[in-house]
Image 1 (spheres, rainbow, N blue to C red):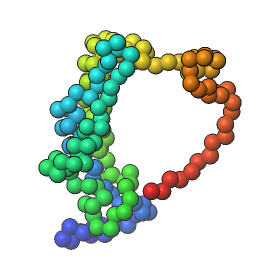
Image 2: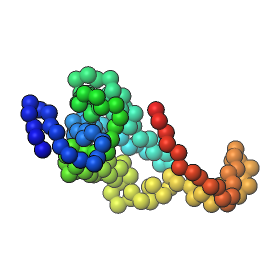
Image 3: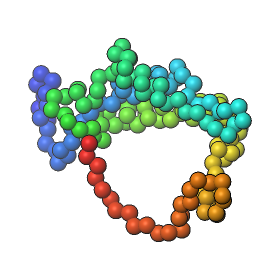
Image 4: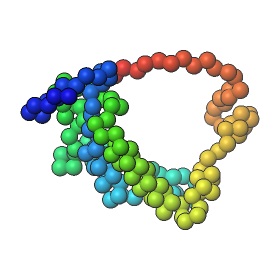
Length: 153
């Protein structure tokens, strides 16, 4: 590999650009730690997840907005999973996961996370019966053949 003035040439079969998501993940983690994301309704039948506020703050607050991974290198037009710093990327994702888990345990109450979440979920088998109060009936038993498609935006 040859490197001069910040540019590098290397031989690789991987055509994807290496992107650095670390500044973005650092900002997400910092904002998650500042906000309470999970809140139960008074009857504990609904869980509010306030992720929109974090996304909005990152998108609109120019002081907090990290440089986009797509604009770090000239000519990058698509996001990739070819990370510049793979191990650091995964450690940041784990830190975000750990913080989300900590906040969820706090919202649910110590040693009550699973039972709190179980109360929120209705078994899918309950939707198969012909209950008049449900505004829909989905044919869960009917087999469907799904095909893979590519979405280009």
